[in-house]
Length: 238
Image (cartoon, rainbow, N blue to C red):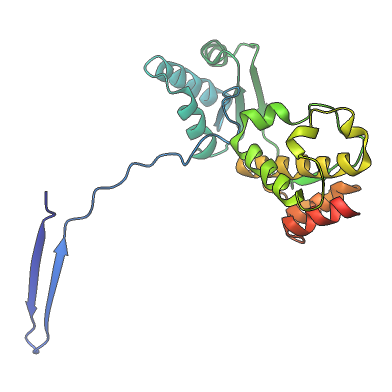
């Protein structure tokens, strides 16, 4: 059970002596994903890309064959999204992965299959809306399905606690509460901030942010101009 070690001595002609002890390298830990997918247990999306339409169809056929030998669809989707180059010809497969991959390999259309050719990359802006974009029940399904979104929402709830007499996760489903200005604006701020956290967890980083009303406060926080504590204070007491 002990690692192997070796001692190596060198006696130089010029009088320089050296000795080094070399030890066997430790067992490499397996590379595993840290935690759950940012989107939780929702629809699994397969992202494919290639240099040409023919290569894309060939890749689809290989992936379809691989799916016959494994059940780890979520792991495959994660690897495709995070460890592969994004080339010009692209396809997105949702819903019935096997049927869609068969259709893509054959060059045929299918429900749950979207194909396209990527344009030169542009810049990304996050635009945060103001009051009026809310509805009763907003964000609740995402809170229950996405660990990243839920964590960000709870961070906002804790940051708002000192300034409000209601609980964020309670008012999101309360149509009457959302009619109050002092409730809806902090609630929308929290949803905006949590959506930004989810997009970032998926690898989407904004080049610019902007917003209207409390959306402007969310933009200031996301850009790093305000801490979450300061942003929560501003949106609750404005």
